[in-house]
Image 1 (tube, rainbow, N blue to C red):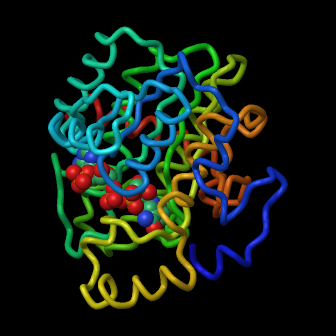
Image 2: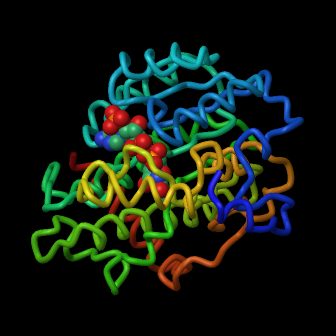
Length: 306
Ligand SMILES: NC(=O)c1ccc[n+]([C@@H]2O[C@H](COP(=O)([O-])OP(=O)(O)OC[C@H]3O[C@@H](n4cnc5c(N)ncnc54)[C@H](OP(=O)(O)O)[C@@H]3O)[C@@H](O)[C@H]2O)c1
């Protein structure tokens, strides 16, 4: 536990920076519930898998390959079914949708946790910048393919980031989703994480009048494999020091996802962005319903062409 997490207090929810995934799910019985989780094999996803399973849930645990998901499940003896979901390959995402449907469990929640960050140079899939395509379009195809599988009070949880504040100044660059008119590692990562916020916001609007809800969140800053593309000096020297002083631990980093997926009483906050298990104001673009609507239409169009 870092020095900062010892000093920071709790918010109105009763939880805060220092709360862990076990803390926020204490006393919650998830037996009989099923959650789909992406990126189950590493970092925050592995801890989310462990704690949901600890509380009695059945987790449909997605990783890039079934083997990776199986290894993760074995590693922590989770109550889970492994599935493959390579988010940058629409055929894999669609196969995952079919596989999840064939398992026949209604979904009490989908936690869109998988992600990549700050690729040093422009990479593309099917003509689209890879972070936007993986972090947003992959999850868009997954979630929209499974809407019929959701229970009446299901929750969709999008793991975004405070890095959405570093998105390009226009927010989503609809005229540059290929990245070819300009690319920066953090601008593109921020754009993809802004897309996570806008997707949750628009999904929440679609869910109005039903018991279903959607949220986005910043998990904190945690040393995980996410920093694999960063400078080795930052990753191997600065980050371990920062972890002791200021970063969250992995159990703390998985808390807000678990809080939003399971805690009673958050339904009134559908559509909102959270941090430290409490609502937080995103950027003005993160509140822009016109941009959220446009993103939905553009994402549908991309999804139907890949
Ligand atoms: N750590 C932080 O400080 C931080 C801060 C803000 C937001 N976040 C967000 O938190 C989430 C979890 O990140 P983490 O820190 O736990 O990182 P991590 O340890 O690198 O885990 C990321 C997970 O996403 C999976 N993934 C990456 N690309 C994928 C693809 N194309 N298809 C399917 N799965 C893919 C990875 O699989 P492989 O292992 O096979 O690559 C891994 O399971 C991400 O959405 C990230 O943006 C993290």
